[in-house]
Each structure stands twice: as structure tokens, then as C-alpha cells.
Length: 194
Ligand code: GAR
Image (cartoon, rainbow, N blue to C red; front, side):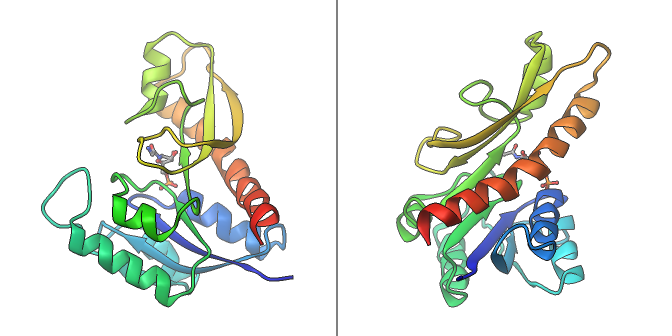
């Protein structure tokens, strides 16, 4: 059976990327990570991509803080197309996806978000859940569309909020759940689309 060709975009540590790479390595996910692209030059995710011997590309995002410039996004699309990517996976990518990229991969961009959407969209969702006094939060894999953190949900996992939790301890617990959920959701996408 065909491997799903995946392109990953991330800005941070890259733990979700590594969980996906490990899942492929163990034979649980029939996919091939063709490229990892980051808007942050010395990010952990690019270093990890080197370690896994996967093509790693820094794309200078341009002058805006929350989105990529039109030129930067065009370059990202060019790289993804060069690699024949079937699915774009956002793994801690901290910029809003623009119309160009959405048009280039319609219904083929996934994101993972650290809350039970539609609750707590936006930044530091784990902190938002803690400050709201919730006892349960979690993570969500969803399609990316023009509404930030608003696309169709593929999968969710609940995570308890425990007495004495700090934002950091809660985020760590959510990330453990993310590392199991994301490979499963990608595998589900593959079964529906290949
Ligand atoms: C993850 O917890 C992910 O849910 C979050 O960034 C972290 C990236 O960690 N994403 C968002 O908040 C997107 N709005 P990683 O670089 O270790 O995978």
C-alpha cells in the first residue's frame, strides 16, 4: 500500500514531529515524512529533522509576527510540491496559515491544538484551561481552514487537570496525549484519503 507523503511545519521543540517519526519507524503509521519546514532558524524541530535524516528547511517568514509573508508562503508551497506531499501536518507551527497555502492543499492540512476545541482556541490553551478552573482539558487534531483553530475536528483526547498542576505540568501531560493522538489521526486521514 502507498505511503502517505507528509510535510511537517513547526516552530518549536518538535516533540510531535518526533512522535510521528517514531510511529512510522515502528510500522504503526504507513507514511513518509518528506520534509520538515520551520519559520525559526535554530528550532529544535529542524535539529531533530537532521537527526532523523529528513530534509530540513528554514523559510524566513518575513516581517509579520503572526503570519508568513506572501513570498515566504509561496516558498513553503514550492518545497511541499517539490516533495509531492499529500498531507501538510502542523506540529507546533505558531503562525496563521494564509489563503495561498490553504488553496494549495485543500482539506489536506492538519493541526494539533492543546485543548478540547472549540474550548480555548489561541495561545497557551493549557494555561487558559487551568485559569478557567476546568478539571478536564485535552488535545484536538483538526483540519485547518480560514478560521483559526476552527476547522473540522478529526480526533480528541481528554486529559485530567490535577490539584497542584502548574501550566508546565499540565502542558507536559497534554503533550503525552498529543504524541499518541497525532499519529493515530494521521493514520485515520490516510485510510480515508489514499
Ligand atoms: C504542542 O503542544 C501543540 O499542541 C502546540 O504547540 C506545541 C508544540 O510542541 N500548538 C499550538 O498551540 C498551536 N496553536 P512540539 O514542538 O514539541 O511538538
